[in-house]
Amino acid sequence: MDKVWLKNYPPEVPAEIDIDEFASLREIIEKSCTRFADLPAYSNMGKTISFAELDQLSRAFGAYLQRKLSLSRGDRVAVMMPNLLQYPIAVFGILRAGFVVVNTNPLYTARELHHQLTDSGAKAIVILENFASVLEGVLPDTSLEAVITTQIGDMLPVPKKQIINFAVKRIKKMVPAWNIPDTLGFRQVLAEGRWQDLDEPELTHDDLAFLQYTGGTTGVAKGAMLTHGNMVANLQQTSAWLDTLTEVGTEKIITALPLYHIFSLTANCLTFMKLGGENILITNPRDFHAFVKELGRHPFTAITGVNTLFNALLNTPGFDQLDFSHLRLTLGGGMAVQRPVAENWQRVTGRPLIEAYGLTETSPAACMNPLSASGFNGSIGLPIPSTIVTILDDDGNEVPQGEIGELCIKGPQVMKGYWNRPEETAKTMTDDGALRTGDMGYIDDQGFVFITDRKKDMILVSGFNVYPNELEDVIAGHTGVLEAAAVGVPHPKSGEAVKIFVVRNDDTLTKEQIIEYCREHLTGYKIPRYVEFRDELPKTNVGKILRRALRDEELAKQKSDAA
Image (tube, rainbow, N blue to C red):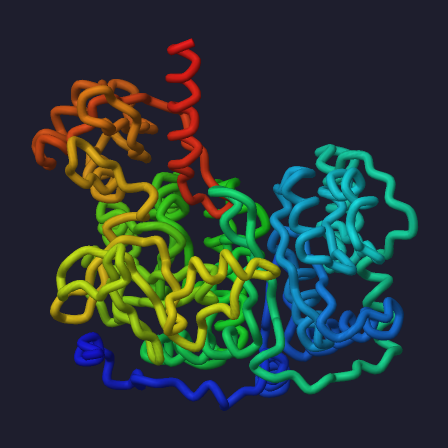
């Protein structure tokens, strides 16, 4: 096909990347630890570990798993914790030893945790003890053979370690009672692992690196099989793109999104490790006042996030007083970036908010706007090197340029498939190996890709397609609106009607004002029939608004009313 997007590539960015430069993630990790040995790698709660320390600690962790736990190559190891120094140490140790990382959301319920542990067949888990009570309830039904627990302050120096661990457990009461026999302490594992040899099995692009679970909000979570080749490819792709703006060995990136999420894992933890940058880990980004104070302590050069995180920061007192003179890169993904948020971000920080796009199944980066962009353009960007994006209709035929269809992605970063789910894999992949994303969009004549909406979120009003992203983007431009979510609800005349859920930042805002504002900016069939004000909207762990939860509430309410 005609790769029209290449004509808008920055001059320094190649059309294709060299995936064969590195055989595995382990090779990238070890190269960075050697090359940047004296530089800071990860910081959290005032403690920083260098690349040399990361090398020693992750080596010890991996050696313990091999020698003391006798895990075999390819065994799965779950990691269940927020952003702490323990995370990169554990994950890099698992990868270096030839095992597979199963990233696990610390906020999982017992049902969700049970499914992921049994589905993945994890043999060991590294877990923050704050969540051990949930594990305790499901442990007998899993294949876990070892439980390694850690406390929030474990990697901090004495006496800060004891003070924080005591405060978390005894004063803040953040650790529910739990009782799991024969657990291993994280620091104990590191101490004993130091005296063990790490056996480094030969890893290839075909070896699994991560089982990254996805789809939990729309059904049973599926494990996307991301190989070392997938991840190496995406690191080569993203670092080639970032080379136009970043400087090797000098970057400081704010890592607020959880590292167990694919966006933060690849964009922050891995990519900036490859660049010799420092990841500043934010353990609790929901405490925005503390978050802003932490930002004030670092001359950060980059930050990633989702639309809701950027919006919340912009609405937190003191954020606009920070020093943004070092900031070069702001990268938004995970959900659509709204124009009012992007424009406000640029006004406050003096830097554009660059939108990118990807999925768990693509490791995740697939498209990104040029980093030289002067402002928000509403696009998710250009396909990154070695990536082909096509737009297909319901019959699998490519649609003419500019027409809307389903985005399909082909490239070396596309997953191997879903773990133990060949039928789901077959449904998701085209015959030529491209991923059906479930996202609707189009490519313009310059090669920029635009998302109109999720295929399943599309609202059908009297035969007309209504895209929630468009409505939410318009309504977010109202000065009295903090957040908005649009869903389709059943309607006897039009089939579906639009309902808007709004979080106000002006208590005097009325439903009538919202409707009138929409009349000014939207065609008739897109205007919401219903408006409901909420104190907050349901969100995923990374702040993505859950339209499905709102839609399910409406359906349940209608069924109840009918009864």
